[in-house]
Image 1 (tube, rainbow, N blue to C red):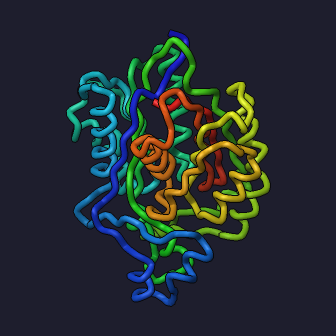
Image 2: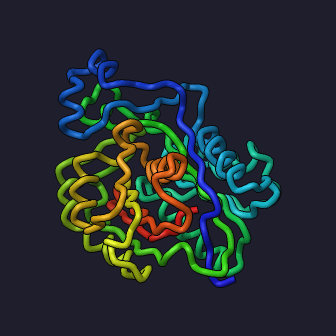
Length: 312
């Protein structure tokens, strides 16, 4: 085995849906204002008794079931999250305990909105190096817990959820080489800090960076996989804002690809956004087994990571 592949995906969102009309009763905003600026209509919000590891475990269980595997088949659990409440046990260990996964290595990765693609690359490297045979890779965030619900510039953006993928050894490298990096000197443009921690960002700076600096990086991720952007069947970008997703997808040049727009119904779910949107494309049959799909995360720390994967 000299490669790895995504065997299956799964996703989970809390039952509670918060609409733009609901938000208009909480802060000075409106459905028209929100849609025109970020393209979001609804978002799912977890309750106080739904911690982020529970969201992650639900998504992971669905991915395991779709792969036809049991918890005992997993020997590595990676959770990308920036909203874990406790430092220890980490979220991955709590997910493993919830699912009954014995003896797995368990690690959290905090790369905020680019977390899932960083975690996927880490799992790919571990499997290809022989450090793991099958990995659960999860992106999960409870952004509602770090949001100031009186700040209309941020509270209209966020949602809660989780997405997961099972990564296993394969004869061919169906997870392409990762292209990752960051702009540390601009890292403060997206932040979750303070006591209690609160999400804040410099929206215009992030917009300019994403729409001007990221397209050539995403094209280079395609080159590393030996593909042209026009060869892609789908593009799944971090679901930050429809006004970022659409121009970024256009500048990448993926003219034949389905572009994930899950942000309209889920909001910005941070590390969950890419696996959540990808899993929905698979579930709806908008992509087929073997299709090349670009996954490209960006945001917090002004980090980015992208790779082309073959659809399970």
